[in-house]
Length: 452
Ligand code: TRP
Image (cartoon, rainbow, N blue to C red; front, side, top):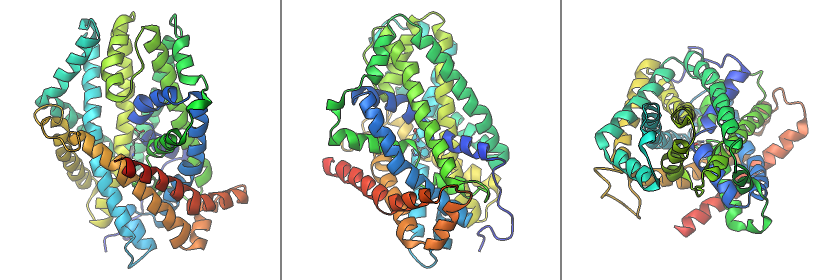
């Protein structure tokens, strides 16, 4: 069997490197284009409290469960389940995870390609030409309908990810995370400074944070739980794969707390960078594609040095997307090298190509293939809904049930307790993994399926 036989598995160079790489995976488009809007819409500070509780009761347990599987096995998601539960069907959870990764990467790279294109467009004065919301919106629609161009940017972005991942765990992923993540934090602080010093910025801050406890209902709580789960990149084995490169001196609990804190922190900071400027310039709050590619370019257009600010913002967005995309690619690459025995260079090339091809229908979904829809969604929307609303939650539930109930109790406790200072943390964690987290994710899943 080729499963990492003989050769020593690569490890992270430092705990900080691991935390930055994992936080890089978690911090993505979801933090920038979704969380801030949802925060403002769903009760501000009141929502934030529910979100933080969700991170604690769902995010930390499942992230810990993934890391423990990863380090305990030292393998990719498929190999990990095969090793820990031989002759059982658990490896299918890993297999589904790898497949989910391919799908997410395929459409994530399309959006990242748009960000890259908008970065270049901003730098070359494109936003200077926009006069009003209608024009900004038409410009975006025209751009995404230009399928060859969109596919080209998608391929360029995938090429960047390929370059990073082919350099290995320490020399590629970790090295680049240590450069890109601090850059992302710096850019965010810069944009915040500009945004909150604008006259009228206060309206944006009060949109984001004014507590409105009357908005908290079952629906909002489920939204917070779903967002926490998605934002932490859980349910498909990213943290299994990244955990498989962990040495035995690193504490799982403190790492997961650091990753979750960085993820939540950046989501909040993104809101503070975006909405004060949006309100100060007299626009309405919006989310996702509309906010990022239609509202914000116009906001920047109205500001002095708008082209610079806009370029910085799209650099930020591209960085957020790259560090998430490389984690997705790494899951596939580790699968191909452990299970199929491929060299990293070959594994990276083949896997990036596979995801790139699968991304083409998503890229065309806004142009040549926009006529093809199912349940009112184009290919892009379908890929997103299938993964975020179904495959990831199912994966998360099964991963926590595996660690909570099926895998050897001693092995789980040994892995989690390494370097752990307070034994009670383990007790709280294991019961969350056994009951609270899978139950909560199951309720979120049932609610989406039911509505569907
Ligand atoms: N966490 C990412 C974001 O906030 C999205 C995401 C979900 C993801 N699952 C993932 C990224 C798995 C990488 C790997 O945008």
